Amino acid sequence: MASEFNAIKHIDKPLLIIYLLLVIVGWFNIYSASVTESQTSFYELSSNSGKQLLWISVSLVVALIIFTIKNNVFSQLAYVSYWPMMVLLAITLPLAMLGGGDTKGSYSWISFGSFKIQPAEFAKYFVTLAIAKCMSEYTFQLKGLKNYLRVVFLFLLPMGLIIMEKETGTALVYLSFILLMYREGMPGLVPLLAFLAVVLSVLVLRFSSVMFCAMEGAPVGLVVALLIVFIVELLFILHYYYNWWSVLYIVSAFVLTIIAFVVFRVVLGFDVNLTYFLAGLNIASGIYLVVMSFLRWRVGYLWIAVFVIVSTVATFSVGYAFDNVLEPHQQNRIMVALGMIDDPHGVGYNTIQSKIAIGSGGLLGKGFMNGTQTRLKYVPEQHTDFIFCTVAEEWGFVGALVLIGLYFGLMYRILVIAERQEYKFSRCYAYGVLGIILFHFIINVGMVIGLMPVIGIPLPLVSYGGSGMLGFTLLLATLLKLDTQREERLF
Image (tube, rainbow, N blue to C red; front, side):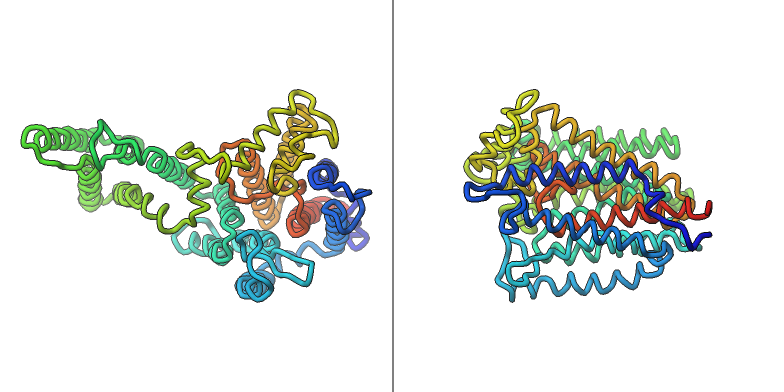
């Protein structure tokens, strides 16, 4: 009876309903955010709402086609489809240049007349399939450097290609696969260290112009970052080895370092730099741990030493990377988000107007098509990356809360589906989808309310964009199809 199995009958209905609700909410708000005086209906193909409706229709047809495909095909074609996608990403940059140049500073679009697609949005789907395939292989375990490199390569390659297209926001989405890796066995220490790296970078940048105790060349951010690395080093030693003697030696070295700094600067009058003393302390303690690893044959000491030395060098590199790697507009966006500069008529304009729109919505909102910020086009890109402020202005705090609730419901259903899978490929794929949607949701809402830099991340299924609509539909439709495999054996 398996050949007569109808997958659509056994679809996860809560996830399907939430998907459709988000699509409908997005469509109505795209119309409200982008309607013009000459537009007479929702359906005009020359309007944004009409174009979005066309993409919604195409996406639903593609979803139905996906449900006609056998489940094992997705696994079998995962690698086969990955490499053509990488080739398409590689040629997107030259094709974009030949097709008329950049689109708002990005070379990630391929034009066919007035019709444009963004391959980077579709790449998320094929990369998720490839990583799920890799991590579900019979002999694969997320242990050892080789297996880590295999997985990381699969998402670092598209990240690099997309960054070359100057689409940094989309490239950062691929870091969401850390969630999948964590679920499949990666130690929690890895995402913790990644979070610590972000915190240290923010500290160094945010307080780069404030000098510690008015000492020239000793920014507060850099001094605090170096002290945090030192403290974390001690915590690691105590947590993993409970070695109080090593902690005592390193703390004693810290005290001697501070005394030496005071003697050189205050007593002898030398213009020495506190950050160099602290960096030297961290490097010296790292070397001490390397020696300890060989004396006691404990590889853990070596890894702690690597953390200390790399983190110390990295803290000094943050400023250089910020000044020489990032584009000027990216630097300005980060500085505005961190409160380092105030640019209400430039980079900060979008966020300021967005927060005004959100605040003006009040509890229940101004009503559909009645948002003043929305109707008067005060917020640039309000139908795309800033669609959330349209919802908040016209439907108020309650409407925004409902939309957030829908996303939490969507992610909860994906988590439920992931954990009930019997096949590792399906589970890995589900966690990949969850990570992508979670990343999009956090970054988009965060940048709209001013907690994150503006980096061009759309709100899944709600923001305007055909490539995004089709890309997210591919991700969710395949997940729903793979989930039906549970029921198939019952028939």
